[in-house]
Image 1 (cartoon, rainbow, N blue to C red):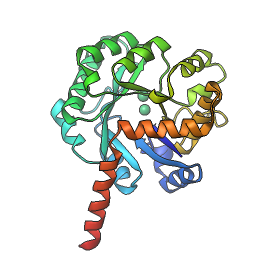
Image 2: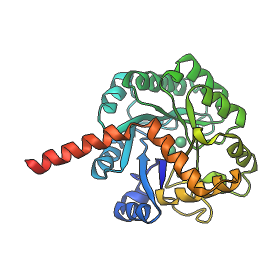
Image 3: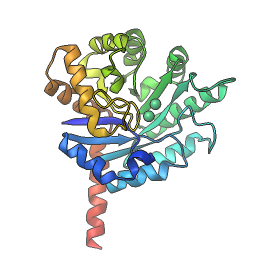
Image 4: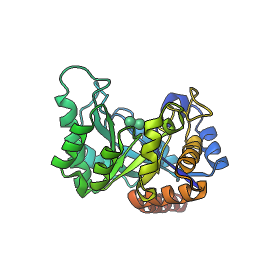
Length: 270
Ligand SMILES: [Zn+2]
Ligand SMILES: [Zn+2]
């Protein structure tokens, strides 16, 4: 079985037919998915999906690319994270690729998320693009190691991966690892130990080969696992087993599922 550690199935490409999305998950042995927030305005959509499907979890956060909408403070994020199906804070981080000019607000927002995660006791989902040094520096300054989390859609070097792992972060690979020209990243996959590895789709974007260029979905996470198995020269079963165990270790889905079951049985009793 596989777990998609990072998807955006609340985006219109996928939200229109969630029955098909979850059906394809079942058909491809994808047992769980984490639907990641990118802003506070659409957080209720993400949470509604997590409340509807027992095997889908949510996160609370504002993406570093988001330049309009409500700016979160620590209290707001900690409040949202109190919901049992919210298993992480993010996605947060730094992205100097898309944003021009003064980026101090991005670093401030990133610090807010790390403080919220530490206070809420829930791990971080970190996005970093063309900003690896500042990302690692702020993680260190804000003591992100105290809560840990995941470097999602990882595209940096093995050295950056190692420094993140030293701060209790897992490394999550997306469909990019299946792209022919991603030779440097394929080498990084070979170097990251299985016990620090997660898999994700980041759907609806970044569909892996053989679906490259089309709409991505959580079911396709198996193609990411297949490529990782090939690169490491191990079976797909061992990739599935390790990444599933890692996900369950990092995110408290047991408590989240238990709370959902009890609220559902309460509903039935009423
Ligand atoms: Zn991201
Ligand atoms: Zn994302």
